[in-house]
Image (cartoon, rainbow, N blue to C red):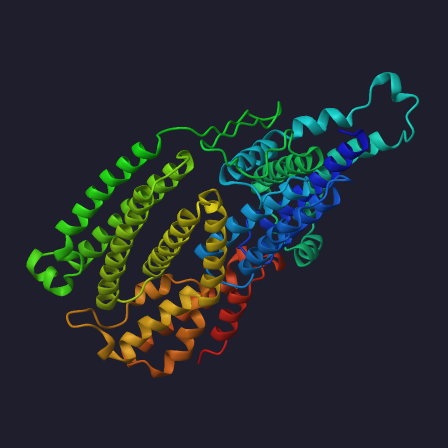
Length: 509
């Protein structure tokens, strides 16, 4: 690596680490997440080496990363923010690989998995390639072109952390200085947390420098763009000396063996569905006959969903990857297995629907319904890819479905949806199924995130007296929490959902 470039990467990495500490450490999720993600993407674009073009098909990766990160600053829901952050980080990492000059979207599933491993290793170990490159040989020290550069780099590397320590010390010693620093940067001065904050900053800088090293150096050995199309798929490539060698080797049973495997599995799953058909769609009659509770009924269906989905996806995708020439029987057995799994999906959704009608909505039930819908869409994608013999693009399809699902969740606002449905069970008791639980579950409403506050405030005047008093108490407690929670008092933690909750709570009588 070029010495000047390495020194610049070191400085920028330290600055990114400092930004991560100021924006993320001890803060609630909000504007800080898109800010850090955008800063990392900008740094990657700046350090992209001349001559390395970005594949036009990869243009959607940074856009997706920024969109998902932006939702963190919009929705006041911690779990949804965690999902959005994970998605933003994943697509941000893919964007850095693309900036390094390696196409991502065009790759097969195996190649993308190997690139993900390379990126993780580079983020963890990339500093070892940067630090040695920043040093100048002694024989060249007296003839270097810019003698001030090395001292500047070393000074910044040591001075930036020291400047932060001095700022904390001065703020602790002088209340006026501390108040000004807190107003400008949202810093909460606590010398007891200083070691942890320094470690967080240096750890973030370490990862940032490693990622920038990956953008600068690029993938050591560029893999083929697509999986080969020979009768027995076989790909082998290594990511070079700086990473663990990775081989993707195809091979395995022939068409007859694969068909037999599928038929045997089909028989087992079909028997499973046939023997349990009485309670798969038996509904309330089955509950009475079998002595099952709603909870047992729904929980058993969900585990069947997981088992069947894993079975179908693993068996079908794995055999498609290793079988060269397949027969019509093989295709029919694969599609049959996916169809049987669809039966279990319908059953699981039906069971959970009964449970929801009896006891109402929770965020967990909402996300389980979403998971069922995602698995159903994934099975349809897999079936389509099986029919056209393109299962190597399954990861791409699942990624697109994941993005669509996350965007849909953010637009649906799960916490607000759950709060509104639970309020309806009080305002319109006729919606509750016979034998179901009526009334307001105030303790659960108190646990919902900030996105649920505006619907609760809007419905307050329409609730019966007892429920109104319970909700009023919940809202007053939430207002106190939002006023005095130190994790949300920084501009870095600004969040639209949280601000809307505050505005609604300020209108309380």
